[in-house]
Image: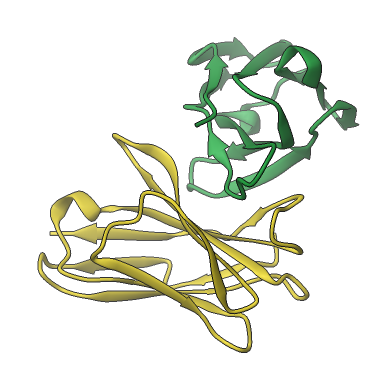
Length: 110
Length: 113
C-alpha cells in the first residue's frame, strides 16, 4: 500500500516563530488532507489539498503531486498551535480510506 | 465542530466484554469510515460503509463488526475485548464513497482494564 512519511517527527518552537512540516508519499493520490490533533485528541481538518496551494490565516499548504510531497507552513506560531499534525492520503485507484503518516509533534513555547 | 457526532466520549470496560460505539455522519454525507488510533499502531483504517453497504475493509479484527443503518448512522461493535483494544476510535464521514474530504468526529476513548 501507499507509504506516508512526515518530517520532522518533533518540533519545538518559540511563540512567534515560523515552521514548515513536510509530508512525502510513495504513490499518486487523489486526496490529501492535513489535520491538527489537539491535546484533547480531536482531529481538526486544516486543508483538503490534493494539489496546488491554499491559505487559511496563518496556515498555508502546498502539494506538488507530480513530486509526491506536501508542505504545511505555520507562521507566527502560537501556543494553541501545539499538538500533532497529521498528513493523510487516499491513493489513486480503488482505495477509499485515508492512510495517515506518523505525525509531527509540535510544541510552541510561550 | 465537524458535524460528525460520536457517543460515548469515554468508555471504560473490562476484558472479555462487548461494547458498541455510535456515530452520526454530517447531514447529507452517505459514507462513514471507522479509524482506530492506538499508541503503537498510529491511526489505522478499520472499515467503510456507503449508504448502508460495506465498501472497504482495513485491518479490522474478526472480533469487531460494524453496520450502517437506514438513517445513515453507524455502529461499531467490539467484542471479547482485550487490553490491546484500548484506543481512540474515530468515525469520519464524506459525501461520496471515495471522498473527497473526510470529516472526523471527536472520537470515543476506549479503555479496557
